[in-house]
Length: 96
Image (cartoon, one colour):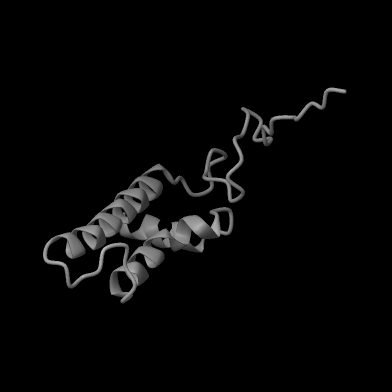
């Protein structure tokens, strides 16, 4: 899992926001600005714990499903893909 994580972080096909999710959670944890201030007992720490847990779960799932070099690897643009790897983008139709 550790080696795959470093491959995941270095892969240019993986979106930057996906790589930064864990870092942003840690920045939220150490930041003095929180959704619930840390001086409120228990609740102030629970929001930090929730953000860190969600980011850790996201990163673990991302790295587990990541397959380096596979055609179904996580694309960097976040668009849904068809079987050929082409982006499936809904078309907007104008009436009138």
